[in-house]
Length: 120
Image 1 (tube, helix red, strand yellow):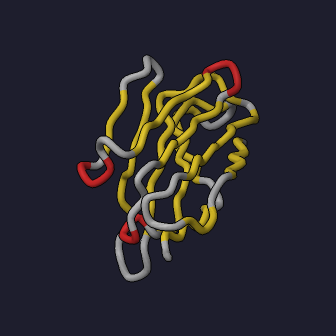
Image 2 (cartoon, rainbow, N blue to C red):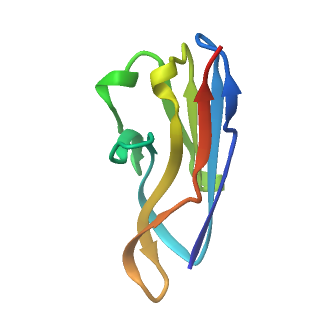
């Protein structure tokens, strides 16, 4: 089992910043990647950013240059720094874990989701 604890969502004005964090704990053997996805009302869940075990990153075109994903391997924690936020960034943001878990092998887990609202 893996537990994902997310924090950092909220309400912010356009142009503002927020930082999301996601800490993974449990019987983790290794982490292949962690990332952030988001889902706006009436839309499909989409990748925002991900970071691999070696530190390689991947971003959605819509957030490049504004969002930065980073990780702390010692804490099994991933962060998403979101700057220059726009109303269209409003969504529920979900953390995703991909790794090897005791008794389960390679598997994925999702966080509970954090609401991010960008509005004046």
